[in-house]
Image 1 (cartoon, rainbow, N blue to C red):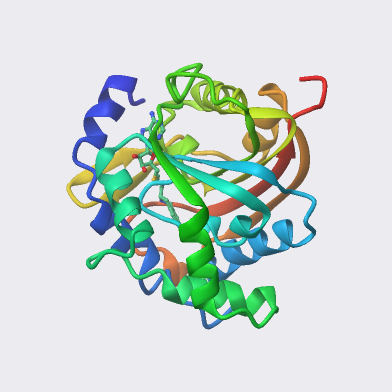
Image 2 (cartoon, rainbow, N blue to C red):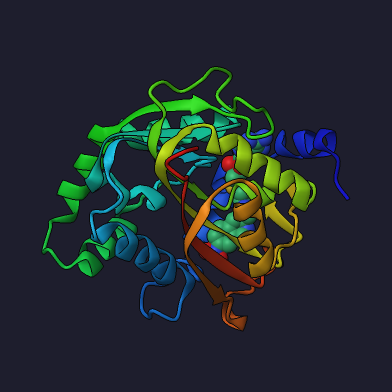
Length: 265
Ligand SMILES: Nc1ncnc2c1ncn2[C@@H]1O[C@@H](CSCCNC[C@@H]2Cc3ccc([N+](=O)[O-])cc3CN2)[C@@H](O)[C@H]1O
C-alpha cells in the first residue's frame, strides 16, 4: 500500500523521456496492426469523437503527462484544449512540443496514424497545426484536491479526457473514486468524460522512478464511475499481448471508458 506522501516522493524522480521511451516508442508504438495497443487506443478515441456528439468550447486533459497523442481526435471538436499535469517537467515537455521547439518528442507517427484512421485524407501537418493552435493552456493539477486546479475552472469544461493518470496516482480504489469525483467538478453538467487507463497494473517505471499503481479490473472502473456520479456510455478493454509486456510495468490491459455527467449534476 503506498501512501500519498510516498507517491509524491516517487514522482520527484519521474523522468519524462524515459516514460516516453517506455510507452511511446517501439515495441509499444507499433502501428503495423490493430492488434497492438497504440492503434487500439487511437481507434477508441477516433471512433468516440467521430460522431461529433462530444464537442464544445473547452476540453480539459487531466494528468496529460508528457504526451499529446490522446488529444489528436478530440482537438477537432473543441476551440480550446487545456492540458494539465502535476509535474513541471511534464508541463515543460508539453510546452516544447506545443511551440515546435527542437528536442521535443516526435509525435508525427501518431498524428499520421490518426489522420489515416480518421479517413478524411487530412495532411498530418494540418492536424499537428490545429492541435498546437488549440492547446492554449498547460496548467498544474493535483487530482487529490477537491479543486484540482487550485481554483474553479470557469466556465466548467464541456469535456474531460484523462489517460493513464488516476489509477497511477491513487493509493487504493477509494482514492481512485475520490480523484474521479474531484476531476468531475471540472466538468459541466451533461459534459462528457473520456478515460483511458491501465488494468491490473501495480507499478510502472519512468527512469529512476518506480511508481505504484492501484490494480483495477473493468468492474472497478464501472463501479468507480457510478460512485463518482457519472453515467456510463461505453466501456471497452484490451488485453496486453506478451510481446508488449516489456517489463516497464506489469500492466495486464487497458480500459477505454466514455461516460457522461448527468444534466442535473
Ligand atoms: N496528484 C496528481 N494529480 C494529477 N496528476 C498527477 C498527480 N501525481 C502525479 N501525476 C501525474 O500523473 C502521471 C501520469 S503518467 C501515469 C502513467 N501510468 C502508467 C503507465 C502508463 C501507460 C501508458 C501506455 C501503456 N500502453 O500499454 O500503451 C501502458 C501504460 C501503463 N503504465 C504523471 O504525468 C504525473 O506527473
